[in-house]
Amino acid sequence: MVLNAANSTVGQLLLQLCHLLRLRAIAVVSGESDFEKTALWLRALGAAEVLQDQGSLKVGWREGWPAG
Image 1: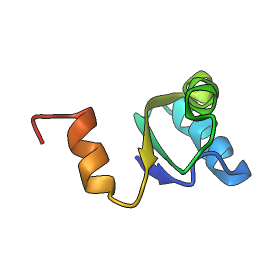
Image 2 (image 1 turned 180 degrees about the vertical axis):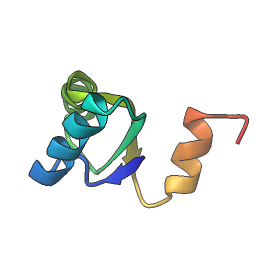
Image 3 (image 1 turned 45 degrees about the vertical axis):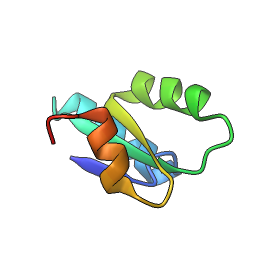
Image 4 (image 1 turned 135 degrees about the horizontal axis):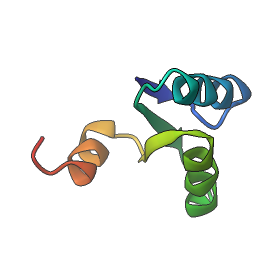
């Protein structure tokens, strides 16, 4: 499951629910000033990956998974 705005309250709840249901969750957050801290927090809640959306998620996706 891909969650946009995963650092919101609802996004955090959904990450935990995905973790309980053993679903792979990919968290997407926008323009965080402290991205590393946020990524660690979201991974602790159950995110398998955390991507930073800086206007082009397609570019971020390819950086995370070069195979496309």
